Image 1 (cartoon, rainbow, N blue to C red):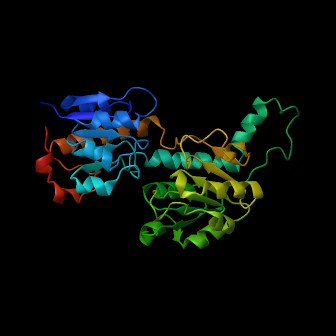
Image 2 (image 1 turned 60 degrees about the horizontal axis):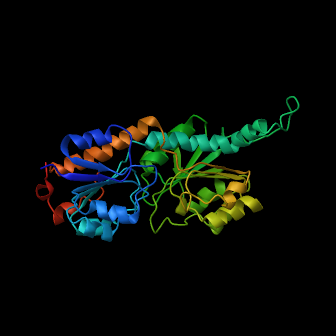
Image 3 (image 1 turned 30 degrees about the vertical axis):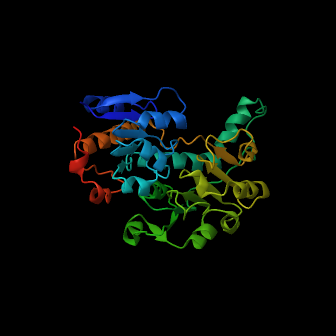
Length: 335
């Protein structure tokens, strides 16, 4: 009898196909995530769960899914999963690191250039019929990034990839991380500094930290006021890393010049969010990893992790390796 797996949303190929080779697979249909009631009902007889970051996977879900031995998330971040509770119950948790690094780094630079050179404003300007005279010396003048100072907060895979791209713009690179490898930073031409120094000296501050209790609202009123009035904030990490109310004030009152925001405290954000009414911010709907290549690799990695664990094999992308002490892989083998 094949093990049963529930997938909380339709995902790109080849994830479902990989699972179907070895498992009985049930996929939630539609663009929206399953309701809480549906999620609880569907996991009740499943051995594996492939979820998204929009699904809250807590102790209640794990207790209802009494047969669960593996949870794999179609994301790098796993703050939506209670890892401690999973480990306690002997449930293996996997994620998708590495495969979306380049996509997110590319998109970070898309936001940097869009906000500093006022690309979105320019597009709206033409489409609204306002371009009614020839070239003008002061029309939609922005700021250059070449030769400026880039501050990278969080120097993991994505932070490093962003730094590599900054070298092509001949930028000074400052990095802050609670556990940064200074040799690696030096090899990328980056200088390790404290957060206050980074905020004060950077022309662009780009956030690449996971969401934890320690990083929640790490960029608030005090931090924004330390930044240059000509500086830009870029967030492709997690929305709650930034105090959104403080950011709105900063943009309105000129504490900083602008921002590029791909993530929000509440997603989807409300249409009356004040951020959406400001011209000095570029907003996108959490799409930094939305390249065809990255999304397909995420699909493959999240599905393969489930198959490996159900085969009694340890995947490279395991979040909680200590779970083996609670329940050895030999005991979760289903294939």
